[in-house]
Image 1 (cartoon, helix red, strand yellow):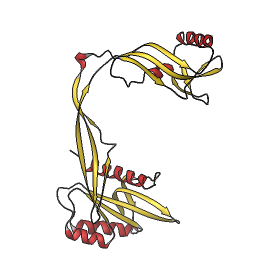
Image 2 (image 1 turned 30 degrees about the horizontal axis):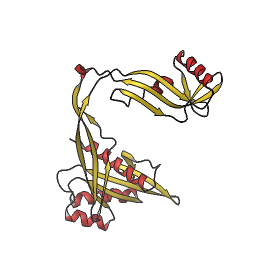
Image 3 (image 1 turned 135 degrees about the horizontal axis):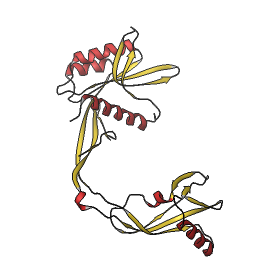
Image 4 (image 1 turned 90 degrees about the vertical axis):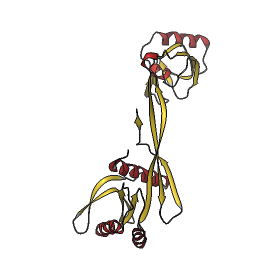
Length: 257
């Protein structure tokens, strides 16, 4: 069940994605802000952002209503009063059950965008399994160099602990154990991975790792398995008076049981 506050946050995320898609990547979209109007009164705005064009600020204000009934004309009229007091403000009214006819006509007259937005959730069965991953017969393939040098380097590596991994600029970006243990395998087997931009350092000489090969064992602990599910959600927004619908996955919606 979605709460009114969660609904506002989902509407915020929806418009962040719309703005980014339209080329506005660095706008600060704010949830639940007080904006002072020309009357010095402060108005609570559910979702808000502003854009400055030629030295003039344009305010964008969203009113959210997570309701079981359609929005009435009086609600739109109250929103228009707030927008007029703020000045240079564009209004967007978002709700779940739509708008009465009078509300639509008044919004159209004042240039307010009306949107019906609903959350569609999907439950995904999941099995949480506990394991103790084990890596054996680990072998590294390096850039081309004489065989005796490779053997010398491999022997040196086998004796080291917490060996750092560097990038091409000589900065530490990882360590050798985490480079092997990438936590992506679920089945036992022999695996290999091509690498790029990962270097080891021996005697002030950087050597690029080209590939890793190893045997992997999951070592599942069956008695600790847990049945459950995860949920994903998307928001479906329909623009009233326009033949337009947008659908985006909700990154902030994450439920596990």
